Length: 337
Image (cartoon, rainbow, N blue to C red; front, side, top):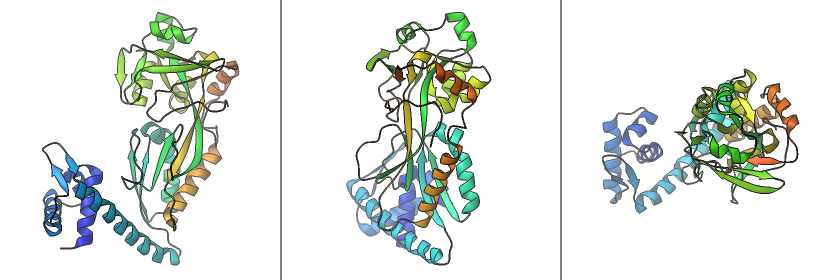
């Protein structure tokens, strides 16, 4: 059997979490993928995957073989790409992970420009709000919001955003406007189910943290879904300004607790250090950094910048986010280079 093809099939199945997903990624039939994995296991004399009706799980041997197979495939890809680079071409495959709402709202124009500039690069973008393992899952680049843990990975700041509390005019007319964070306990607050700490919004007043544990009446795993729920008067949401900017601009949402503005959150590009970084990865990093440096805070409507004038020396931060949102230096709201 073609061992390199088998390695590619094995990697695709693990990446997608199923034989069907691996088949879709590679454009093969489910039966062909299943045969490739079975033959590979027979030739290696070990079980690589534990199969159930609902899931696949790597065995210890499978984890070991996957790591080696990824190195072989990546080295081969780098070798082939280097030949093209010698002729001035940038080509190859990039696997990238980014938060869903940020990507849909802010990232796609930059990726469209990258595609136009480098048409021979295949970009595999995964939109997910979980904290992916860049090395173990064989990602070339990930975008993360909030504080970064210490690691051997390289991080470059891409932009910044702020998190705030918002509700619709109709909701406020019916239920009143919260004046202090404690008032939220008596309001219908919307819960983002991807949050690690559950329905907790934490504020800082005069430099001291103040956490409010909420009793949400509505939960959703989509940030954009919660913004729309708030605009429809279902309750109060706590979200980054790039996600609510248009709704604030057209009057569907109103900023609340402006004396307790959320601390800005940095958004980073994260990637592994390599002796020879592929030209396609360097190109993508350059395009993304240049794009966000160029737009700066101009993506945000003026209404949000105007709202920030009411901010004094108190700050609030939603620290229950999936992406480890943490307080940073106070600046105006909006994406900033």
